[in-house]
Length: 344
Image 1 (cartoon, rainbow, N blue to C red):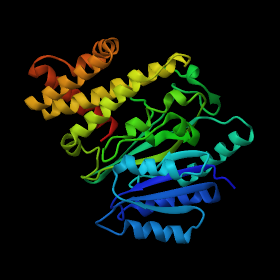
Image 2 (image 1 turned 180 degrees about the vertical axis):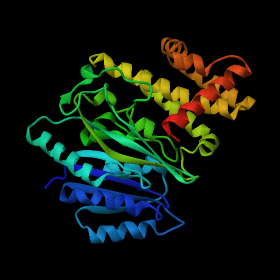
Image 3 (image 1 turned 90 degrees about the vertical axis):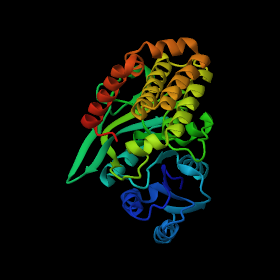
């Protein structure tokens, strides 16, 4: 019997926390396929743990070992090996709510039985941020953006707030959508989850939003890719992803698509331009400022009209305030937003 859902768990030296992730997926039972992709781990027994779960849960868990290719390479492997009708990614340091997972699977099965399949299911996710003596939880949902509990299209999309955006954490794609989109993420590059949540969108026509908190996104490890210090050290990888997203958008033929596809993708690209710019401003060196100018110049060369529109948007203006005082004001605003929303 064909699985309704494949979940890929990219792992790299993940022995310390991957079992919590895998255990949270097991209540999916025979309806789920869990692909634990060991991306060339060298420092611990990640592969051994993956293979133990494969032995204990045959037909549900599969362990896949590969040479190190980075997060994007592990997701690519998951897409290539998936047999489920739907597909999603759960990072090895994150987890899902088991009870909600069962509900999501039941809803996907019902949509298939009723012959009303969707290209994407959206659910909420929770930022679980740890700090000295505290745990902060913040739910990211689509209230006021998408009607819940019915099949919808881009035309049904309401106002998307600045804090609302589609990420890997709240997407369950139809597997065939990923194949048709030609998604192939770059290897040995962080922050490719933005490409995952961006490139397939023009191939999604039907959606379903379940207003449930499925995914728990853990934030708190010092070596985590979204840690501010780590992001500053990997800024060139963030810029690479940003430029690839510019390429994807400017080369996409939007003719025949709902206008909201282009509108949302432009909003998303604007947010990624903002993230890249603000981290370069935090870096603050002459080389960082040169890179920020080069990034905006790359957009300008790719599509002048798009450049002008994003440059003149609220976020674009904020990211390009003149003088040292202007740059400090922008960074201060980012840090306030980070404290309020707990996003890294």
